Image 1: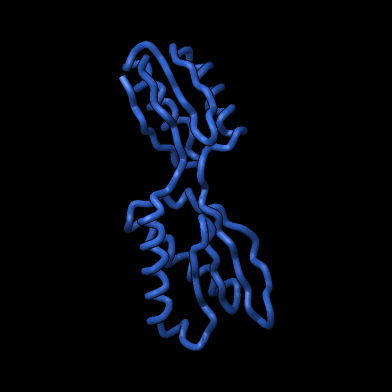
Image 2 (image 1 turned 30 degrees about the horizontal axis):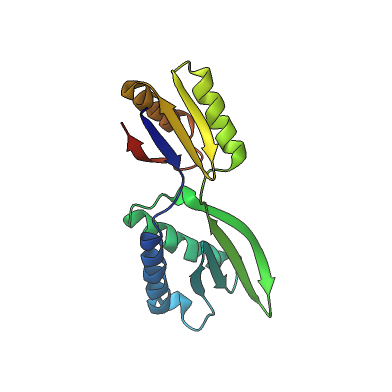
Length: 161
């Protein structure tokens, strides 16, 4: 029976390279000289450190540009709140979305079910497995998901005939 998986996961190699390029640009830019401006990646969490919120927004701009150049969708970024740390420094943690949450999975299942396409969708640990009897139905459900779900970047893999 033909099936495919719907996933939401970023290419971590490209993310890592984008962060390295952002670090290089921060160290060479004149407006960041003598400031604690920094960015680092630790298991799907990006931490930005700066003097003020304005500086954090500049670092985020650089990061977004680098991610876009590497074809990584910026919708993977889930910004946290700005926190004060010792002295006059601030930090912000950005989490990378990984997997489809249960609530969103149920929403996608409802969209597929309401469309009357003859496929079934099942949530399996952060993925949504869609199965059907015809390949055309699966492709129609892919097109439907691309059109209806715009708040997170979805990709499709493990297509089996």
